[in-house]
Length: 295
Image (cartoon, rainbow, N blue to C red; front, side, top):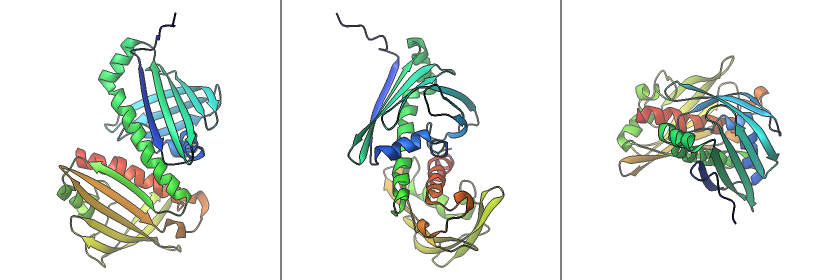
């Protein structure tokens, strides 16, 4: 007689193939500096307090929802098999166990993500109230974007990030080319005009480590493409950022390409390191611009 599957009705499972080697995918799952940039559904950010990736180790973090709500999360690692398997016991509410299996397929990685909740009633509540099934899909989509960008950053390939927004192309063009609109989701520029040759600057970075960005518009096709050079005052190196817009029915796909980041110097704290650009653009396009366009 077969044993009854007692997890039926209280589990979520999803698989996804990633165009990156298993060692890289494992790295973005087990390193706080990476996982904070992609974990959670669309619009969420994370503060990692502790991440001790070993059997019995604790992962303590807070997810910040787009509406400002904070969600405390505590996981205990039950199993850790490097490059193969992670099993996490989510000991804070809602109680569940997550098993993530990593399977190398040449230079690509197949992930099988399996969540089992404590009870059928809890599963129903989480799916209906928090749309956990949709949230898991969004989480994998964010991971896919981040992994692809980070894989490119590990090489000298351009950083390329694409997102599709529920907004017409005219509204998206205004968002990326109008100074007042840009101030709501991007940087607060003193002035900006989408004209080839227009020069602009702004200050950005972490508190105490801010940089003066010097930029100049290089290509403009109204409603379709905007590109500008991007460098830093007092530092060598120069790069170019390009926004391309594609109309897809009532939606708009934005493709951001950032070339030349490898020309910037290595400095303390690695502020100009390529992986920091990946994290920054992932947040700007995946959270800031999305929230602005869909609010």
